[in-house]
Amino acid sequence: SRSLRLAVIPGDGIGREVVAQGLKVLGAVLPSDVKLETEEYDLGARRWHATGEILPDAELESLRRHDAILLGAIGDPSVPSGVLERGLLLKLRFAFDHYVNLRPSKLFPHTATPLAGRPEIDFVVVREGTEGPYVGNGGSLRTGTTAEVATEVSVNTAYGVERVVRDAYERARSRPRKKLTLVHKNNVLVHAGHLWKSIFDRVGREYPEVTTDYLHVDAATIFFVTQPERFDVIVTDNLFGDILTDLAAAVTGGIGLAASGNINPSGEFPSMFEPVHGSAPDIAGTGKADPTATVLSVALLLRHLGHESEAARIETAVSEDLAERGDAFRTTDEIGDALALRVTVG
Ligand code: IPM
Ligand code: MN
Image 1: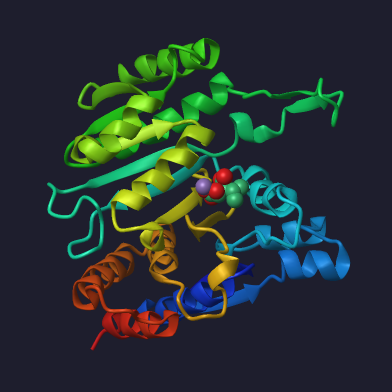
Image 2: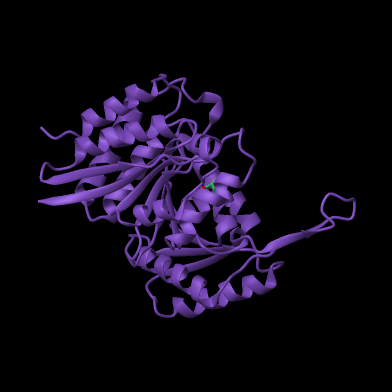
C-alpha cells in the first residue's frame, strides 16, 4: 500500500481553520490504499512568543523527511513585521529550494468578480521563488536619521533564472494554448531585465511550438484587468510575481480562491502548498474564512505527487460548490463539509 507523509504547519490567524478543512477534504478524496500520515508542526506567532523560536534546525530537518508540506498562513500583528515572514515562510522556501512558485488563476463560473461574464480566464503564474529582491541582500546606513539610506538589492543568477524559465516553457508546452509571457521591467531594471530576457529568448529556441510574448510589469497589470484571457503561462521574478498574483486573485474570484505551490521540481526537498492569502487576524475564529484556497492548494499537492484524478476531483467539486453557493454566505466548516462530501466517491 502507498503512503503520503504530510507535514502540516497551520501557522497563524485563520491558518489553523482553513488547514483543518483542507485535511478534511484530503482525507475524503484519498483512495483507501493510500495511507495518510500527518505530522503537525507548532510554528508561528504563538511559538515565537512562548519560546522565542521561529524555525529551529531540528524541525527543518524533520520537515524535510516528508513527501509534502501543507501550510496555512504565517504572520501576526503581535510580532514585528518580517520576523516570521523571513524567518519561517521565506526560510522554508529558500531551504527547500522552492524555485517554482506556482500560482494558477482560473475564473470559476458564478464567482463574484469584476470580470464576470468575460471570456475564459485560465492562466498560471510561474513566480521565481528563491531569488530577486527577496534574498535579503541589502542594508541601511545612518539608520533612523534624516540621512538614512536603504538598499534592497535584487539577486538574479543565470542558473536561477534559467531553471525557472525552463520550467515555465515545459508547462506552456503541455497546455493547449502553448503560450508563455515573460513579465519584467527591462526598460528600467536593465541589468536583471537583460539577464531574464536573454535567457528567455535563448531557452525559447528549444521550444519552437511555444508562442512567446514579453510585457513590462506595469503594462501587465493593465492586461490582467482589461484582457486577462490573453495569458496562458506567465514567468516572472519573485517580487513581480508576488504582486501580480494578488491582482490575479482579485480579478478571478477573490483571494479566498487563490492556491499556490512552492515547488522543488527535482524532488530533492518536499514541496510546500499554501493558500495565497495571509493569516487575516481580523477574521480569525469567526468562521468567515473561505477554506477554498487551501482546498485547491491540496489539489495542487495531490497533482504534484502524481494523484491526478484526485486533484481533478477536488477542482470539479470546488467549481460545482461555487456554482451552488452563489452569493450565499457559508462558514469555513460548512464549505469544508460540502467539499468533502462532493469529493467522496460512491
Ligand atoms: C505570499 C506572501 C509572502 C510573499 C509574504 C508573507 C512573505 O505575500 O506568499 O505571496 O511575499 O511571498
Ligand atoms: Mn503575496
